[in-house]
Length: 486
Image 1 (tube, one colour):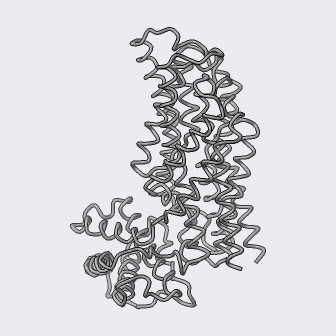
Image 2 (cartoon, rainbow, N blue to C red; image 1 turned 180 degrees about the horizontal axis):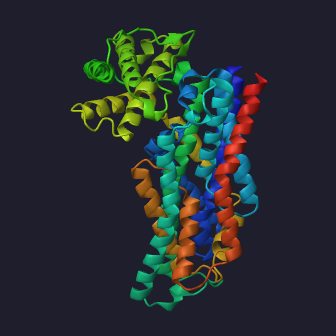
């Protein structure tokens, strides 16, 4: 049964990345196709290859930023059916919305669709599975961080392109750059610039958007085959020994903080699992209540990590049935330290750097991406790029401005888009290629006094505004149906 679930879930991940390819990457090829810098066939093949390379060379940080939005309880206690339904609901919701907006030729963000579906799943899990308040099923700190990057990036695209276009137009007086494309091939320098910017955006898209598929693939593998993928089996003996050593070093720190936050003596009970389920009471506390219980949980889980890992010099030696339990302990400690850091509750600790180093070492054992996963996602994204591009290209080239996109506008919009994505990638933040480029083109139209098509902008803004609530509803409905079927 688990291999049936695995096959279905992996197919959904590949399907999502395939749709992502022709839905999002059409933005990267829009300028070179519309300006006749490259023929459509060559453009989409080249963009697909650049996306492929972008995925292969990505760090994976963005992948786990998206996964971190999922409820903690589902990340450590999910049954096989819950794991499958979580992934299925997430991807089905995203694919439905992406296909619908693509059919209408409206460029929207695949990242927003994923986040909306994740929120819906978190709410449904709280209502039907855990019985806690629905808002406790959402990682609000991480959600705030991700949403800020997603909502700020379009403004960066709009303002960045507007300002850069005005600067370029005041410096470079070549009139051909600011005229609508004709049927003939543009001058060599213009063509080279547009191809170069298309290459950059395609590569950046692969390095950022492709990571979301990798994160989802790892979610599938860990949830359905935990004995094989819960821990990074390539972790060296030296790294395991260092992790045990630093775990022992932080235990007195947690004990000290617990004593300071407690007005009475406490007793530590060295038992966190019962019937295979980890005790999450202290970890699921609302963020304002992360005090004594948090330090007690960090202390107990770190002791369990030391006890479990000190017995083994290699993860391969750990029994299959114990690997998921150890992963849960590591995930909870790392996740809680991250929350404390973002709440500035580590700022006054002399051992802040020690705790952050501890968190980073824990993350390395569970946040990893096998190379074959990268290749699988890269191929799906690459192939998806090579079809279905026309609808979005027409919107980007002709329907945003009252005048057709000119050479300078296309090149500058892609330069700003590429720079924004690469910067976000460096900081491990997910952003929307679609929103940045579409906003950038609108900014270039304003700067060039070309005017914008209000009807198109209304449709774009409406789709952007509806993406989150619609996908929250889709995620909630699909996950709820799966849970209620059990």
